[in-house]
Length: 311
Image (cartoon, rainbow, N blue to C red; front, top):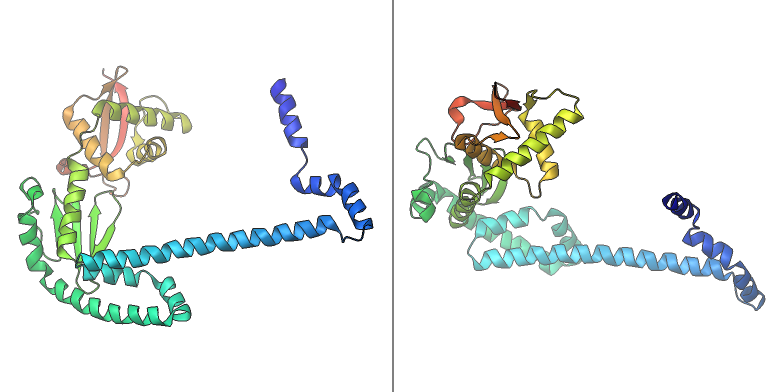
């Protein structure tokens, strides 16, 4: 009852503008008879002006932070001797560079000259990438556990049975690093930076220590939620992608590529029973519907999962 009364009170509570109109009519009228203009209207006008100034200032702050990030990225990559990264920053700053042409001619001329210089250096580096990249990878600690796949050929390199793919674009001076089921990462074709990022991705994907019991619980919870939402019977086979999409809503910082690796570990571990039911997987020929699990590629794409009592 109290909640209903409170809800009613909230609905009937007057707005700020209606208070300005109703509660100040007496005072505004008194002030107007003293020779002042329509006070309420003037105050509202000045408030609107102030709000426009705030909006303009907020947008100016956003623009200033973007500009700061642009120059900071250039300086960082200049000091690190990464011309391809600088070139990528310059290419991706189209709108900002247009404003520079209009508002700061000296800065625009600096950028134009810089772009010509770094593009020449980046292309020179790109021509050497096919020889330098494999050599540099072999010198890294991670290469003992995660060497380049022997089937790799320039301009495409893969790691861990093609789970991580590196595509080299010498013309654009960029590398695209793509984990299976993960987001594409585009970086400048500076060989040391590419090797560093590949190592970071391999560590992120394969050297974590996930809690497989917690993972099983999360998968089961998401599976049951899908059954209920779609009015499916208990034990029904549900598309794996639908379960992973539900997980993405329930789990903080969900990453589909990490889920791929962890699900494979869970299945290989064999401890897949929860609440008297065991996790089952079924395969599909539809690559878009399923997941090609890490180190389980021979079995094909896993398309459906279910939890069933062992008979």
